[in-house]
Length: 167
Image (cartoon, rainbow, N blue to C red):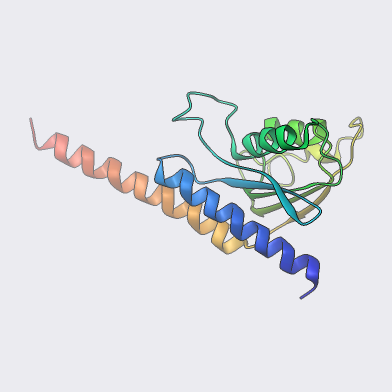
């Protein structure tokens, strides 16, 4: 395994830790970390539900954190690690922030805007190119999402069962 692959796994594991924090708050477990020159520059996890903010995706929060710490909205040379393939909104922010490299874990077949549902970063009119690597710690990243939704479905079934007995 190359040093770059080891670094990618290390930072994706950090993003998974953040995703777990989101899950503990009832949020869809997605975590993101912005890294520049081997150091964490920004981090975030999903909080659109608890924050009442549709833009509070893990990537957006990590980018905002990194830009504030860097004192610049342009994050040229930085890598964004995220546990789930970004959506269209987040891909737009990645381009505008000039992230140089995107590394994601699990694919998102319904809303993924990098490789799955759309290939937004490949659009010829974009004024910034991002190197993309997918599938880093993919099994772990997929598992945290599927376990979260499995628990949620189980809780819903349990509530329905309890409510049907009260009639």
